Image (cartoon, rainbow over all chains, first blue to last red; front, side, top):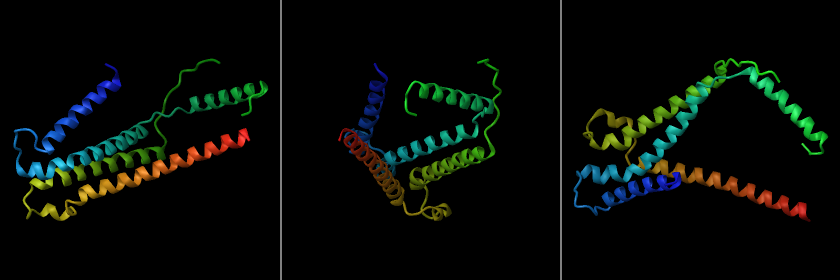
Length: 93
Length: 94
């Protein structure tokens, strides 16, 4: 199974279970508060959680990024060399 | 080119501030929203904590509005770039 198929199957199962509970298609009866308030809010909560997780992940990695000034200088030199090399061979940079 | 061993340092001061503020902001948003949307319906109406949250409908309206607004901005930006690149191709072949 490819990664895409795996992800699609996972979301498909979650979506099916969620919709079945939402439209009360299963013979299970949930507490009234859960059925009326929690279930409709769950997709939006998932969206907010995903957004917060993404932002937090970026923030965390920016915070703990290990900067390397020597690599930066070395890279700039290599970029200049590559540009000169390509220009000498006729590529417009 | 001689490969010298690179010693990574820490992120610069400003980067740290940006990273930390993003992290705390997202944590606060997550905790507040989880409390609002999931915990509050089970809490007795007279409890003091309810005063800190807007009415529950806004827990759905706000993400909905933000989603629509965000999608509009992103897709408009995308379409403008596609139109520009098509004009460039037409100009080049003209």
